[in-house]
Image (cartoon, rainbow, N blue to C red):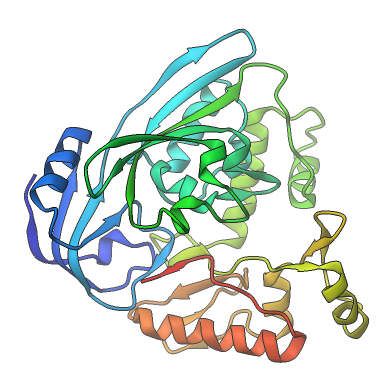
Length: 337
């Protein structure tokens, strides 16, 4: 466990932004993590997982702790369900594929989401009709201040749309070290509610899809719409889909009757942020080396040498334009550092 100084984070964030850490250390076990936290209790810290949901706009004047804990195992099972624990440093997509290969159901719609397992509860990540909270049981975390090991149940995580306690009242207080999921062993709840998945399955003449079929469909959809961060720097969806009350939405819909939306409750609707951004003319637009992806307006990209500040300015321009045009505020899903 070696602390390095003036360390480049270019390869540790999926935007590929050149930023430096004052100090950097990778930890490979819970014991290493506890020891490090105890030794450096007075030093400001920045916790880094897969680097997939953040935009670095400046150097990090702190000790960057890269959580690189590996391992996964079955901790309990019965005829219908299996409880699987994954360490925080496991790659999310690889973990999802592992569950599918075991014929464990529940995570298949979230295939190919970038990042590591440990950060998934923070955002309550989700895709194509499913979210982490649907299969989440608990997570174990280390309190930064006193190194106490704490278990958070689903209820204690206060999950919301791309929200959790770790983004709010418990922000910067804990480091998640492992996550437990409850997955199906049989009678899988196959979710094909999204049209893109239905279309993919129809193209393959699949009428009774398996977990693998769903995963393959999601992978194909994501690859067709989203750039590979290894080839073009990005952080997936940059913005949240705005949720509005039906009362607030009615006059907006009257003014823009072609606007896409989905009812999510008796009182709320969700508007696709990508549709708003595309209608405003930003899809495929480029501002120097910062831009909006040609196939998915939700994705901001780094064409090579963009700074985090340049990408942030593009995002602010988009937000202001959407607000001025449609009267709808869209929020960043990505963490701005």
